[in-house]
Length: 247
Image (cartoon, rainbow, N blue to C red):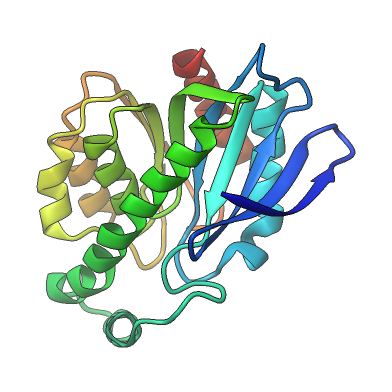
């Protein structure tokens, strides 16, 4: 992990940009974090296709809110976003998905799989490498939480990464059928956010996915409104969930 920039924000949060191999990222740590009192860590997921620069204001706001609860946060650039190399296969799958949505019919699982599964296969090891690097810093410790982003990435991480103790998942992205089967292996506590009128996403598919999760503790927080209309109190409930499990 090579830090490239650093700044102290007005609330004392320490924000550092870094690169880990070819993967850019941003790490936020509370002012009180130290080797004698390390902060627990939250992995901040983000939706694909936007990139860290465009997402920075939203990610920083989430990180500063987490820092107020005593947590460090880290976000990384997803494969194909920002300045990372594009995949011709992913670009074609994304174009096919847009065309299917415009046509108004059901989206073929083959299109979703072509877009999502390669992303999951590449992003999850990158998240694990980021987790290794963050936990090697003296001011950061476990347990670790995961919050937001592409839900299929969260599913895979919850299955393969034992250092993640709890996860907040956003039911707002397409999920290949094979990932629904993988969700049955998830056992950590989950808090799932669902926008009831999310345009372009199948509500019943989101409910079926929630039903498939194997966790004994899982909460579905469903609110009226479209994809970007998640109310503030829903985010606050998710923060309380992470605080309860990471503390």
